[in-house]
Image (tube, rainbow, N blue to C red):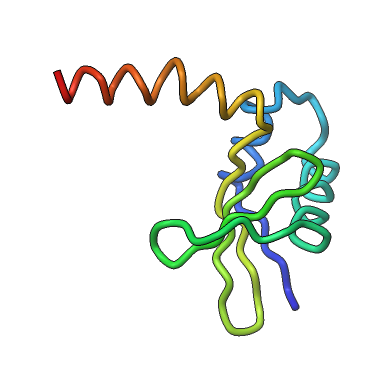
Length: 95
């Protein structure tokens, strides 16, 4: 199975994990999540979520290849994002 890492996934890993790792090191981490991680369920557009060592990613599986679309970050980052970005937009829309 071929694993393709998108540039967007690498960029998002750097931003959300506050990382200064090299391109190759980030690629290795993201590929390891696909190989060793667990499926966390369906995502929009036919994609799947995966998680390993607390880091979540979104992948799109095709016939003989898997494309890593984006990195969602670790649990602390996702919680911060939910409280400080997503919830205020939801509250403003509902009010």
